[in-house]
Image (tube, rainbow, N blue to C red; front, top):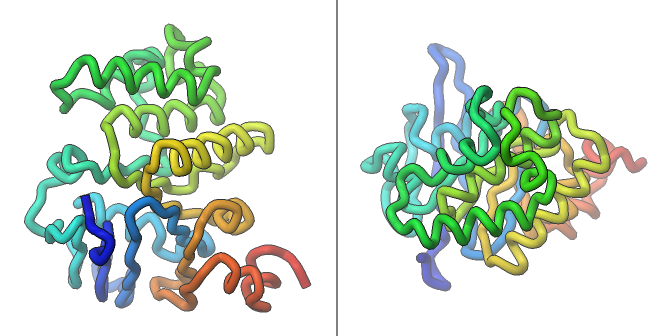
Length: 242
């Protein structure tokens, strides 16, 4: 657990290349314990690349520290068991596994079975639709239900910091409200730190205390939610207010 003076997650001068393409160009952000930090920007801006680098899936230049530990020295599995958990845009569910089996897979590295059962109850309370469909195969569920399951499976890994990549992408408004309620409860009642990457800027601004705008691989603006809401460029380009 980070203390009050050390960022929970600190990214400094992050560079990622795909061949000769410079996908991330000196990205620096820090996420404090207990906050929701939003990263907004258009498709292709580099949001997923940044999260993949944090999760240990990509090589990078620069530094990423989680609770003061240099993640370059930590395996992707140990990043998860240390509490930094990634819910990907692709969801990465096991399609022929049931809801319950997918949730169990999220807890595969945990030894405390009592705590696992407690978290299973928490996930079902958070998403009652999953409880109703616990014996249903993931591939037969709607996109919104699959998104709930992906978040639920990530929660079964017992995160201290949860990274959510485009959790509202392609979802109906009623499902977005369910995701909205879940994020609020996880942060406000469970104290979970969340790094939220979203094209849906309105959704991100609804939750995040601080945000960064990522465009073409670079941070173009960083500040509080109030500063983003008052910024003419953000209002016109991302919120649709003229």
